[in-house]
Length: 453
Image (tube, rainbow, N blue to C red; front, side):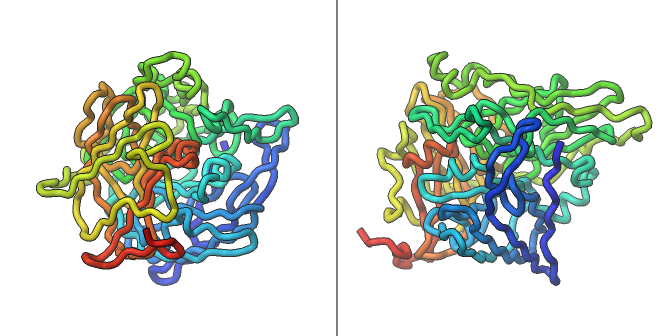
């Protein structure tokens, strides 16, 4: 299995500088076959960016592909000018240099393009990579930390191929760009040969439309969701990741007993009523994603997994602002994305309560909020179990309402918006997205370049 290079940037004091180039290339996704692709600092996908809490990040992104693009740092809390929303897309041959300070707990995040109406296509071509945010608290825990040895990124994307083995970019008007071949760290059906009896997998569902219900055939422990560590490891037999979601899991390996990471189909069709629609969204598909070759007997025995990880407390939402989001078709609250429209303004820090409803009986949606973390407080109308802890992307099953306790990064800027959207990227590109602005109280909001309504 290829391991994306760990890119630590250039560190001067507490400032870390990175250079990313979006470029065209060719990759061997299928064995012995060359496919034209896009990638960051390479031909396909991108390096894993490493950064630490408290550091200042100075990023330079160059656009060497053939279309305007921009990079969104999915899961990061940062000023709107650095967030990489569609208003910040820049042309081929140009570069963009956002800067921000890392002010959040250790987590596995990722980066991908966010140009208006073509985010799915750019990500599908290969513009995606992982982000490891580290902090002292998480470093102090007895968890696997050796990148590429026992701490492994698993970037799950997918592809479908034309007869001449190029990426098939045909977008189905119902199901979007649903790849038929899962791709792990840039290739199909990889094998990872473990040298230790415990490994940490940083799972990233970077697919544009596909859900993955992941199993290993043995129980494993979830130690982190999108936005960082849980308070304690949770033993499970499977975990569901909708597009854009991440999880960190600990896997115990016994010498001589290889494991297979499988996507074994979403239970109960994800709550969809009709089998054929569930099939169309690929919810019943099963795949072997990754073979994990167990270590031999010489691998040393390991101590117990820590029983406690970090303190995770449910926020107090007393008196919080409440907002409602109704997901239906390609719209939110009966509106399609409009780059000139601000849906709401957040003018103070603190928790908000968001009610997010999937009004469709036979379409899955999920929900991602930029510059935010949230907890799922309640789920009405669904039997699904939601992993505790902080998320930034969550599945919203058909005819269900999630109550989210949302914590937004407070970086006032009256001229640039953040996004909330379905992270099934075809839905986002078709208009299932809105914008909010973070501002000071009584500050006049006027989007840069937009006409005031």
